[in-house]
Image (cartoon, rainbow, N blue to C red):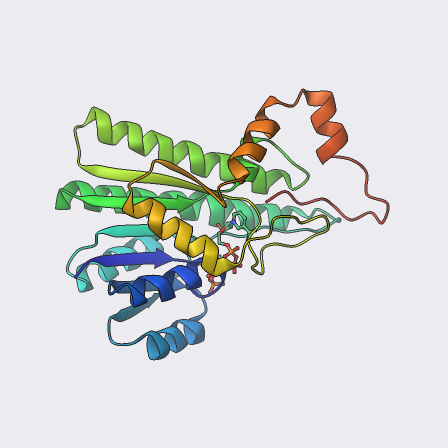
Length: 251
Ligand SMILES: NC(=O)c1ccc[n+]([C@@H]2O[C@H](COP(=O)([O-])OP(=O)(O)OC[C@H]3O[C@@H](n4cnc5c(N)ncnc54)[C@H](OP(=O)(O)O)[C@@H]3O)[C@@H](O)[C@H]2O)c1
């Protein structure tokens, strides 16, 4: 039976992925901070589920807990890092920037590195990280977009290392647009995908071992446009002043 570990499985995209992988017959290891939700998932998804509470921002403890879970599963085929955070706060406090950095950058990197290292020792494995279309350009939530640029770049770097070291490791960068979860906040959301649809597209793309995946597929066009827009036009469209003082939030 194939084994997957999902980091950030207590809600949203990660939770939908957990349900889907369990239905598809995989053994599933689930992580997140909210222990009660992990236990609820274990009770509803059945005996193929193991849970491991984890705060990725506590990096050294998270690395050890990830390795413990992988050992308890007897190895792991897929690791999916969905854990992430982001804030829409017009006051723009440093504490929230720091929280996003610790979760989306330090927390992401420690698990991505631990998974790659484990796959190297196993001689196989597939790592997927959930970045965002926001990765392609800076936006009004500066640390969020920057953190997702880090995620995409780090994954590309790991893919590069797998090739240069001749390792049979697959690495996938997943860039969602808007998905209907607690993270999709703010005005002006469009093309919001149901989380089950997002999970199915991610599952199918990983089965095909794709290196880069846009969810849903039409967001590839948006990413291309965002990359090509000249700076003044980008500022006018994306960074425009909000009448009520609220910040725009490009996921
Ligand atoms: N929804 C969108 O429109 C959208 C678009 C593009 C990208 N994304 C990305 O998709 C990923 C999943 O987000 P979502 O939309 O599914 O939102 P969500 O429902 O808020 O899920 C976030 C998940 O991350 C976990 N998490 C957060 N901080 C953590 C920490 N320090 N340690 C361990 N786990 C942590 C949460 O679990 P606990 O709270 O239990 O720890 C939760 O399971 C994120 O990386 C997000 O940036 C979302």
